[in-house]
Length: 75
Length: 259
Image 1 (cartoon, rainbow over the protein chains, first blue to last red):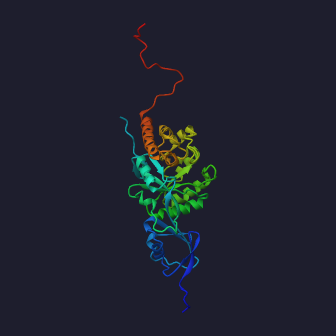
Image 2: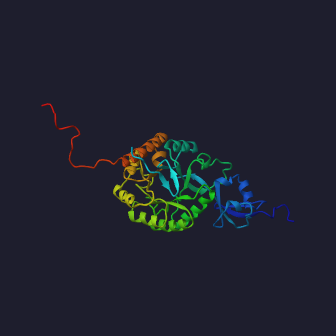
């Protein structure tokens, strides 16, 4: 095994910025780690909307482009 | 007394003909209070990236319960049909409904719609099952086209977004109302209660506004004024107003005058 470094970590682009995913690559785990509530958000992975029912079985990998949106005030 | 017909969009019925935006408020609490004062049942929201660094943050929907309000996500900030379509698909996945306010902006200064792009996006979205309410110019031909492609309402602008200029072309709006088979909702440019009343007196089915309320010195008071203005305008419209005449007709009898 490698010395010290977590070899399972990788980088994705999250909302336009690089984001390091450590440990669990499952989308639902990332959402929980970010303290987001699924009922308030929607997710797009590599330009495809991810149905909420699939959050648990969607596995992220290096280079993925993730967009997580919510509703804010607007006219 | 004259009875009003129900305000229906797609197959949903609403009691209030006032639709309000949620932007430009001081905070979520003020947003909620203003919406409550307005009596609106439909509120627009914008679709934006979640702030990743701001953990455990409150959300707008914590203040505007989607079970109580029809949430109408807009595609503000979209300058192409593709961007608007992408935004709508994401918005629908939040899971509070499939009604969307379609905006494809053509110009940064005026925020006027890109008409061809709006029609193009509407076609795609309708096919995907969205209930599309397009923000559009006060052009009767375009409004007919949007209805033909299956939009559930048309939302012609009164004046540029946030301008407060009121209805600049009541004649066009009257034509749009006459030709429409779907609800006509004036959206953008309303400034004060008389503007909202004027829209209703022209026969429009509803009015959508944001800045007029949020930007007023007393937003809660203006919200209430708008609610009353919409109601007054609607009743006046249904009452069958008098004709406009060039000359006078006395209101008091012309016989029996003491001389």
